[in-house]
Amino acid sequence: MSGEILFTIRFRYCKEHGSFDESLVSLVNRICPAGRNFDSKVMVAIGILRWFFDYQREEIRTILLSRGIDISTGEISNLSEEFLLRFYVLHKRHIPQMKALFEKRGDVRLHLDGTGEAGNEIVFMAKEGETGITMAAQIIPTESKKYVKAFLQALNSLYGTPIVVVRDMSKQIREAVTVVFSEAPQQICHYHFVNNQGKLIFKEKYAAFRKSIVEMRILSQLKKLKEQICATVCLASENVLVVAERKWVALAIEHLLIIRERSNG
Image (cartoon, rainbow, N blue to C red; front, top):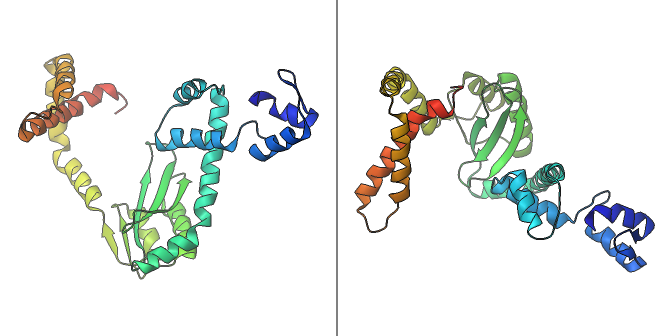
């Protein structure tokens, strides 16, 4: 009946279920947002499955079908995007409460980071380090000073100046922070620092090692070995050092195989 709700509301008649009285039409109007074909709870369920549990559209469709709800993958996309927009608005509405919480805990420890594939847009995020709460997130074309500065200015108008800013080693982010939060000390994120150091120190050695492994033609054997290790890695009866060793070997194999699984580099 969900596909006929708009028709039902307008004409009080469904070609599958016949006529409806005024009370039922009124009920449908209360359940479904204006201009929508589905109960808001369906939108929330789809949003949680899509964005919190990372289910794909086809997987969500199968789950809903098992409960008698037939929705196309295109409509699932629409509902998941609507969920994001509504969640964003709800988050913005709670800014005063978040600001009060941060002030109670000694003010904001601002963590900045951007995530995205090479050549694509960046999801730039601001988190409060003490609570782990996401303060703001925005899609920007690049992590250039221009876009990061605009993001930080909007953040400053909502939360004020943080007591410290934690960031990666991007020159553009550093300059933007210096302009907007001139009084806040800046610290380098330890994870990003170590990650960058690893690339600088071991890049050539990793490349040479991978090349030698490829030339030995044993990648298929390594893949089988990884599968065997992963199948037995969590046996509770085994010594913790043995389990740790297996996990380490599995990660090392994964590192070697990634050049084939992600051929674009």
